[in-house]
Image (cartoon, rainbow, N blue to C red; front, side, top):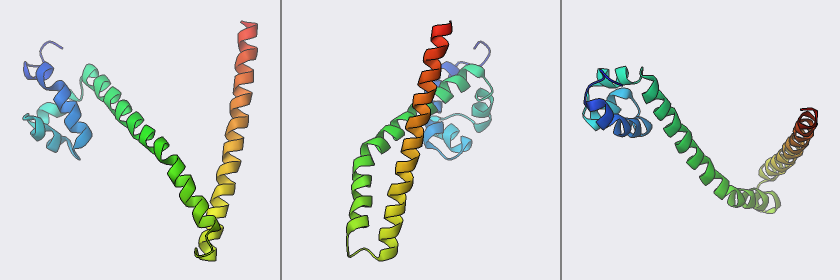
Length: 127
């Protein structure tokens, strides 16, 4: 990372955090006190982009974890709408179709996973 200036090591992680929060490179650069063209140059440095991608994956993983935590409440909502006589018939039908479709996809996914696991076991036996 030689030749990238003294600001690079010191501001790299704050710049990555700003990129995750801001809508544009310009906003992110201003948030950490560097010129937008400097941040654009940093985004061409493989080490910077690797750290940025790692931060994106971490951020995404945390978001998916929050969604998984909300799944029971979402399922409860769908099921309540499906059986509530106050829900219009079209809404109850959509909820029922949703449950049926999601159940079918879940079964398909489990079947595919079982088949992949069986193939992996076979492959391990041959190696």
